[in-house]
Image (cartoon, rainbow, N blue to C red; front, side, top):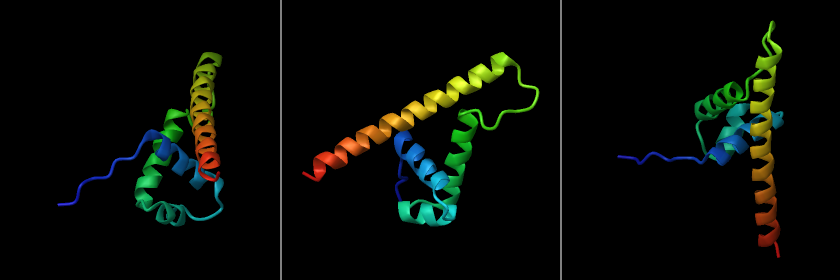
Length: 94
C-alpha cells in the first residue's frame, strides 16, 4: 500500500502562488510540482477562502477589516517563505 505524502503549508502556499502567477494551465503547474491537479485546485480554494476571497457586496467596515487582516497575514507568510527560499538558494550557489 502506498504511503500518503504530506506537504507543508509553505509548499502549498508556494504551489498556489505559482499557479496563480503563471499563465500556464493549472494541470501543467501541478505536473511540474509532481502533484495531482485536483490537489492543487483544492489548495487554491482553501487559501482563497482563508484569505477572504473577493469582497462580497454589502460588506460592513468591520468585516472588510477582518478580511483584509487575514489577507495581510497570508501575504506576510508568503513573503517570509520567499525570503527564506532566496537566502537558501543564494547560500547553495556559493
